[in-house]
Image (cartoon, rainbow, N blue to C red; front, side, top):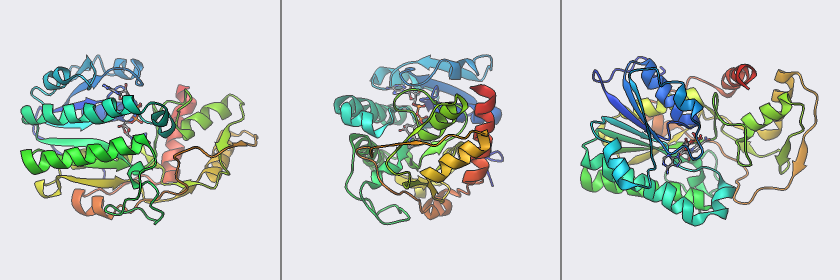
Length: 324
Ligand SMILES: NC(=O)c1ccc[n+]([C@@H]2O[C@H](COP(=O)([O-])OP(=O)(O)OC[C@H]3O[C@@H](n4cnc5c(N)ncnc54)[C@H](O)[C@@H]3O)[C@@H](O)[C@H]2O)c1
């Protein structure tokens, strides 16, 4: 269970791209806590220097401020690296609809640069962030790998392309790649700020400030909200996965289903706030329901998520109470 018992060769070096962001900084922390070396590569475009400063005093931590759109940067960042955890990308479905060219360069070419740089440097495992958005308009629940629909946004397209490129790198160049289709991750250090902030931290911050959050749509949309600890486990288990599981993409979630409106009232209750939400229009490119079949990751990666939604939310709220 979990990931803390996993053992990697002594002195292993993990390169975390996007390591100054929410998921990446949690990966850096987990790897450092396990006693291994971390190199973080991040251009600080959506990440934060604060998430770098946390680890700078640790001799096992190194930070490179750089852009994965730059191939030479990727090649030098991969020198001596055993495992790549590629998280660098821009999220947000609505923003990707506004900026298709940037998303193509950042999320597709950036990851392709990293795949090539990893191959040249003989990296052992290349684990990368994909997304549940690759299921598009496929209505069937739970979402299962191999049953994808039409893509609904440029963001989803970038993640789908990354998966296809990664598959090519396993097929033709023998690089072991593992795609992790995250489903709405939440937890400590996820940013509550900005127009494209994720819903849980945004609502927590607004409610703590006595502001009234707006729910897009009727609140009856559901998601498989996934606590960050489960995502860390998936990344580290993928670094341990057999070659036979390479070239594949896996759903990474808890396998539950939470309605937005219920989450809203769980938050008001936990924070002791009495505020009704505003309701706004549906967002373009959003899907109504999402819930993951996680049996493939269980079978092929040994993934056994330990944190259900309630346990994760409790920890997340506690963190925001102490850190906002
Ligand atoms: N948070 C979620 O619910 C979720 C769901 C599905 C997939 N993902 C994927 O997981 C990954 C991490 O997401 P997150 O929520 O931690 O987002 P985040 O914005 O907090 O982190 C992304 C990090 O990548 C960095 N970055 C972006 N473009 C870069 C570039 N060209 N070069 C170097 N660094 C760059 C940013 O500065 C940031 O620190 C992303 O690939 C995202 O698409 C996240």
